[in-house]
Structure formats: C-alpha cells, structure tokens
Length: 144
Image (cartoon, rainbow, N blue to C red; front, side, top):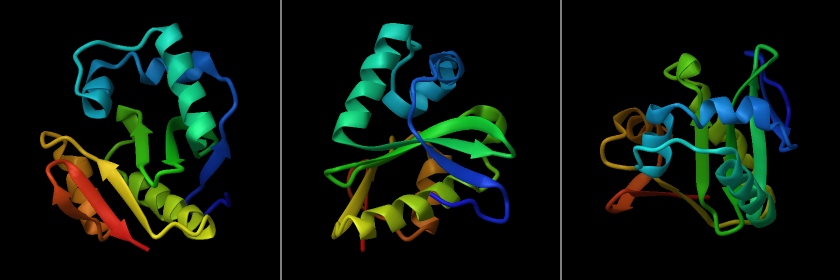
C-alpha cells in the first residue's frame, strides 16, 4: 500500500507482538473492537493475528513513522480498523478505509462490511461519512 501526503502507510502484517500488545491492553480499545471489558494477553493476540492473516489481508497502520494500529480486509469483505487512542479522531481511520476499499476493488469484491457496536459513535460516524449504510443492527455495508 502506498504512502499519502499525510504520511499514512499500511504495512503488511509481520509478528510485532511487543508493539501490538500495547494497543490491545487498552480496555477502551478492546471494548470498541470486541465489546468486552477484558484486555488481550499474548496468546489471544497471536490467535487473532493468525486468523486475520490466514483469512484476509492484515496491515499495520504507520503514521509519521510510528505504528499506531492495524487494519484488515477479510476475504468475506469484512473491514476492521484499530487505532490506538492517541491517534483517534485525526481522520486516519477514513484514510485506512479508502485504502482497504481500493484493495477490495482489486480483489473484485462487490461489497464490504464493517461490524460497529452501537456505542462506538466515532466509528459509526466515520463509516457513515465514508458512504457505508447500516443495513442490519451494527452492520454497515458499502457497495463497490
């Protein structure tokens, strides 16, 4: 994936547990991602990345030369984005969605979707702003 003028870069997944575990040990991030009140341990983190890598295209999000989160496009069209709290609300999620939509088009997908919990207002607003429509409770779709 290519860099844009703001310095956002998607880097293909590679094992980087020390950095990634920091994101997933934030209870607010885990609530946004999985709607749970518990944080990840190393074993759960490894299982998650193994699943994402096998079933889709998983990337780290780099901004200003720092890894700040991850994003994935699964083969079934599901998009997920995790950005650490220090970099949320900077419109970086929208840039990631743009790049994942480009990848979905390259993969000849007809539609992508995102599971966004009702309490995750910032993500709901961002995906809606990007053109996604809520067609089922907590599921947002975008036709390519």
